[in-house]
Length: 151
Image 1 (tube, rainbow, N blue to C red):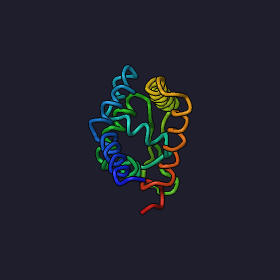
Image 2 (cartoon, rainbow, N blue to C red):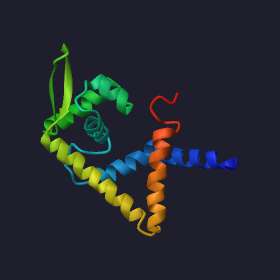
Image 3 (spheres, rainbow, N blue to C red):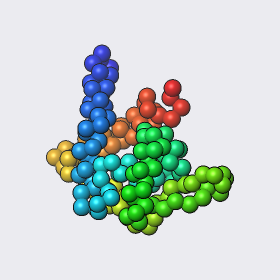
Image 4 (cartoon, rainbow, N blue to C red):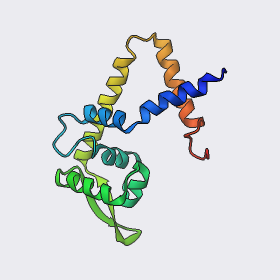
């Protein structure tokens, strides 16, 4: 591997991980899904879909937001019927956030939109290249610097 490979990948990841890039993506994914669903509330919905029921503080750590911000965004989603709060059976003082059926349907719609957008962007690639990219990206996620336990 040459000396620029790591820098090239780091530069590309930097573009993908920028807040403005994520906000644009989230806006496209949530368009038309209801007033409560936007680039600000999407990470709460998506995070709950990934992790299952969580307290606002635990979810905040997972998605990179503080508890207060998660709580405000969860309020909007609860009012829209996309999540609910219930007591934590392990801690009577705590409340867990959980997706409702409607919330799960919104997440499914956003994930379908994301998959379709990715498929569209790869449509001009030779199929073998697209499949290799998917396989190698999964390997990089599983084994690379972002992998669990890779400190």
